[in-house]
Image (spheres, rainbow, N blue to C red):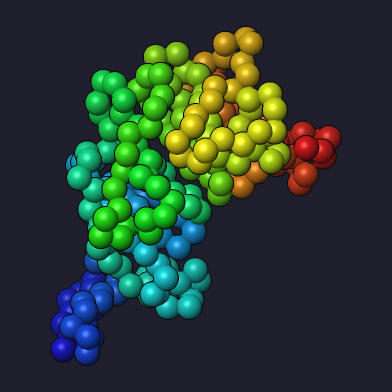
Length: 220
């Protein structure tokens, strides 16, 4: 069975699964974050996180994104104001006054499986912003602008003064910040972390093998 309109074409497969192509989700989301094989978006009102997998999409979805099957089979119970997707995790923050940071329950449960759920992260205070990289996660604390990170630290991307990794999405450590610089935004790559201070200065730590820190000195 097929049905369509000016923007969308939907079909019912032999397995009774609904698949749609086109602008099926246009104007429904105010924010979207892409992981390795999945994506999450915040609904337009900024309440629920809608997440789905791109694994069943067409092979050319990177070149022609509107050829991708648009499905959001999983909806969060929590009301998030921001979500971030990485290679292994999706984390988010809510509008709660305290303990507002959530990450996956554990790595053994597949993302967005039936029993998948978020769990509150043990941080000193509520978070202003969270970012998920390939193998590490960092969050900015709302009260003091300090950054806490978790996960792989092979290249010093946690900024904790050592190369010791922490339990992914569970154990968060504060970065070494003797000047008490306050941050308002941050971005993560696979091996590097960068933060934007409240005075609009950029600070980075981790790998600089390819100059990703913006330095002329290419080294970790």
